[in-house]
Length: 193
Image (cartoon, rainbow, N blue to C red):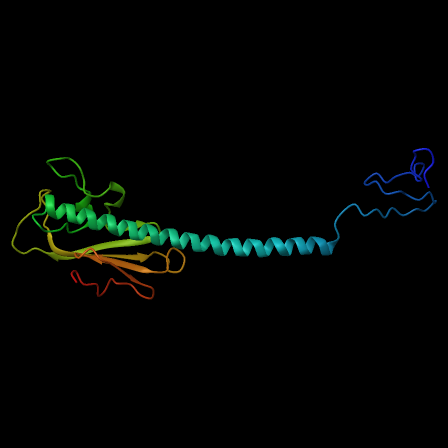
């Protein structure tokens, strides 16, 4: 009951940790509910655990997708570099390895492939790239002084299958991108066709 604007429990002492009234008995027990119960905390932790597991699965899938996109982009860059090399420096033949594509052309001083990709074998974006080809036997050299290849093939395999990438990629002289979800192209990838 209110009396003149004052609450009914205005004279009752209060707990220090909360605002609930404290009885005025000699052996009073302070039983304020100023926190969470164990069940409430367990429920919150369960929800946080479920959200964390879902977000980790999404994160892993994003990493795999990003690695595969990097592999496709790198293979396209290698194909473009090989095409430019054959037209400008290789006398219609191709570079024998990635390091040859990273060597600058004497007339312009520009490389066909960026320096970060001119390493044999190349590890980039969770994939390992390997370029191979059939060497020319007629003795002609490229403008950079190397022995060219008649045709080439490049494979891109995940460094850690299932974690850095799921699919395997390859390309060859035809500049077509090949994809396989189960095995590498490395042992039997043709250089043409």
